[in-house]
Amino acid sequence: MPVGNHQPLGETAHGGPLKRELGERHIRLMALGACIGVGLFLGSAKAIEMAGPAIMLSYIIGGLAILVIMRALGEMAVHNPVAGSFSRYAQDYLGPLAGFLTGWNYWFLWLVTCVAEITAVAVYMGIWFPEVPRWIWALAALVSMGSINLIAVKAFGEFEFWFALIKIVTIIAMVVGGVGVIAFGFGNDGVALGISNLWSHGGFMPNGVQGVLMSLQMVMFAYLGVEMIGLTAGEAKNPQKTIPNAIGSVFWRILLFYVGALFVILSIYPWNEIGTQGSPFVMTFERLGIKTAAGIINFVVITAALSSCNGGIFSTGRMLYSLAQNGQAPAGFAKTSNGVPRRALLLSIGALLLGVLLNYLVPEKVFVWVTAIATFGAIWTWVMILLAQLKFRKGLTPAERAALKYRMWLYPVSSYLALAFLVMVVGLMAYFPDTRVALYVGPAFLVLLTVLFYVFKLQPTGVPQGAVRAAS
Image 1 (tube, rainbow, N blue to C red):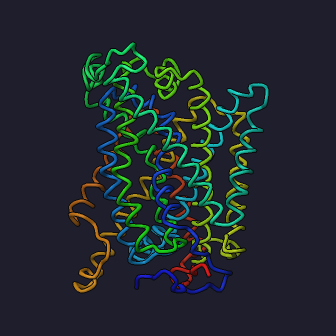
Image 2 (cartoon, rainbow, N blue to C red):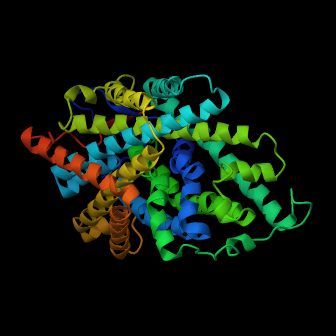
Image 3 (cartoon, one colour):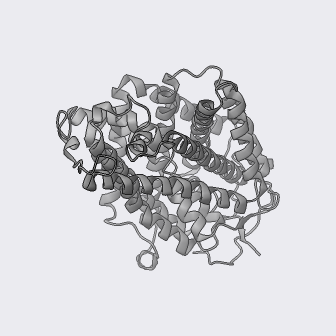
């Protein structure tokens, strides 16, 4: 049954419940902030190099697939808002093994992603403080974001709100200023620049269809994290309202922030020059005459990385908490303090100390490897969401289907098309050598988890769904 605003959802034998302290503004900004991270600010130059101006098509196609996935997740989350979200849905509708693999896979992918994020913080703080060893900044980022998560979910929500707002304001300022350059000649002696750069250097699709296909892995990495909205369902004050609103706004905002930003950048600069002179965002602000552009963008990229790390620690903690409730992780991780699963968070933070260590060792290639491994993990999660939603819908009676408050568009065709798209992205990752490493690490981790599941007989314990409570 759907859960109302103040209806208790039950407590567990393992420990106290989570609290519903995330308001609509928190979740709306988290939904957007989660998918505007280092992937846009840093990964966009690499993706442009692959596809040229046609990278905008890649983001639109990927965004449509994400819209379908989020709609599928929203249908289940509104009907049954639980901590653990898609891991619990995979368990309920696809079986215990699917839930176990999805939960631990998601925990692992966010660990990998957070390693990339704290490394990015270290690299960009190094621009301002080159004499300070990188590992110190990586450690400081981890300790600060870990501390925020350990205080209370409301503290996490507030920090994430402001982090996301910084990114959003920056991108809007760049898009508005860029349109001024293109249409009115701001920063160009009053001569309107126009948009001829979109086709003047080898055409709109200079590297052909192959270039667009090659870029899809980087594009889908940029969208990683948007499914985090589902994990907030167990701590949202009014999930029936906040989750649909957040999901409904994601695609249009992606169009504005991703496609809009790239349209401006690619119109102002030839695509084959982007990335050779630093961040395309810095280049655009400098074109507008803002001399401190490099410092501004450096600050924004650092907050973007901190935001992603903050969200990643939140996600790993909630997923481990949910797995422990189900008897698929040590029971102690299901305990909470002040509504926060602190033991689960501390394990995740401890594992992330490896990321601090890797700051001694990380060569440039590792960023591509890390994004590829994380993308594989995200694709597994998205596939499980779609398969669970298909099974969920089939299990409803006609009356229950009619009563759904939030439903998938064009069911089931949209779900099958999104699944086919995700399978294609995995095939592309296998085809290109740089991303092939993900198809060694990702499946190997899933095989290891499957062995552990059967050896230790990690069947779920039948804990009541949705062990959360309304904030009093």
